[in-house]
Image (cartoon, rainbow, N blue to C red):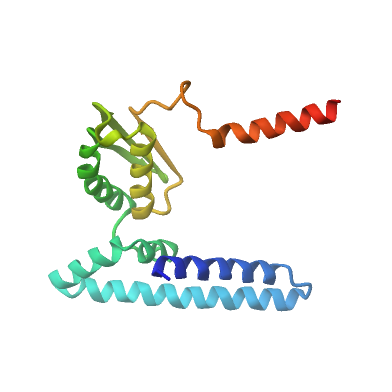
Length: 190
């Protein structure tokens, strides 16, 4: 099992347990459990903040370690959760855009970061063709994934310049639910 899978499993388990605590009939037990959870999160947040402080005091070696830690998708998410990420959202998005440029060149596309404001990331993608047999949707998906890994707190990604697929080929998985609904309607009308 990868670290990311294990992290996802633990996150789901925490969500399940918090839901269970919220459903407790005993108000005092529910309040105590939620206060305990908050106290543990506060302790972890203080620990993360102190680790980042210590690394910042370690000169170039500390900065190198901070960059590596901040780029790790699992740790990035935790640092954002505890509001102690060593780099701003804007810095992380800009780095993600720079990192994805070479992949986009293979798709004969270029990307420009237009801005980051209130959780919304705006980028423009210029595609001159379909390099490596890629679709605009595939390019868009790569860009969105790179941004969300770097800045999981992103609330919206606005991609300009790539047309939204319309008409032409429609994937079968998009048609099947509509066909099932149509058949259900026909049966109930008969």
